[in-house]
Image (cartoon, rainbow, N blue to C red; front, top):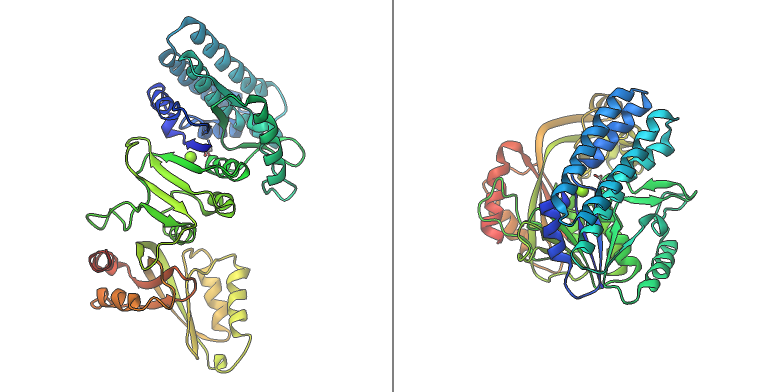
Length: 436
Ligand code: ASP
Ligand code: MG
């Protein structure tokens, strides 16, 4: 069995839904996870915001606009009168429900119910479409098995037991459709897995049922080995390990959020990123297998500020780093990269909101120097210490480029370097030329 997840853009119109139907109606057993049609959740958030403010005109305007969009989809999607009728009734019932909140109290509970309508509606329409075309698909209600616990973490035991229970009633069924994103919380109330949570749903289902693979269908052809905006001839990475993918996630190569991949990683189920616009392309497979002796990708993160903290008191002292870290912590500012010497430490941050306060506190016991407009360039691959020669190739590639910080050994998959923003493009190009 496989789990296939399609995002909002992939089911964003009647035509797109038809294409998705073509992709999912083969003979092997599948669970298809759908997001709401693109734009829906944003509109539902907008509606909720109006309802909180009791601005019913504002709410109704967005509700009507969204409803018209769904009615158009129904008109374009179905051919048979019977299904056009079913589609219209379905859309009407969901929007009547949303409209009912313009006459009632509106709290965070009602908001969650409103936000759930997008996925409920999209999956039900899609399932009607499959049935109109003679497919024997079954709609699995996510609210009957997807659940979080008191810590707002997925309740994996509940999810597995209930999914298995529900699916055991359909042993001859090969195609299941379910909603991404929505769930119940520990109190049984309708809730969700946060924005973009459909990937998480797919990963949780795949892990619960220990499926053969999880496919995440998007509109890009997987992860690339360098940034195509700055480097020509980048290629998509066919295979990458969970650990490498997590390293790259910070650098904007965030096709999948690392937390949403975690269940798949723990259950050791490979995740494939595939392109709805180019279904035959190989895409990227993320799995636990680590390619040996390979540099996998180069990525960069802009908008970095580097702070060099020097103090005579650091020499042979303990507790110095704790003091430094506590200051950043107290201003809720994450440190990304860190390098140390005997008398100083350099750190980077990507959020300058509290920079002045942080610097004031640091100056009480050290001298500080700040470099703005820096870029972290990271090289990801099989970079265990025994793998000789890679550091040399990286530095050989960057020999013309001033390097402000170097971080190696934090994990077995990453070397990070800090360079000035003006050198970023040259650095990325030089690395691609030398490493791939
Ligand atoms: N529809 C939800 C959102 O827009 C969930 C998802 O797309 O993954 O955030
Ligand atoms: Mg999405």
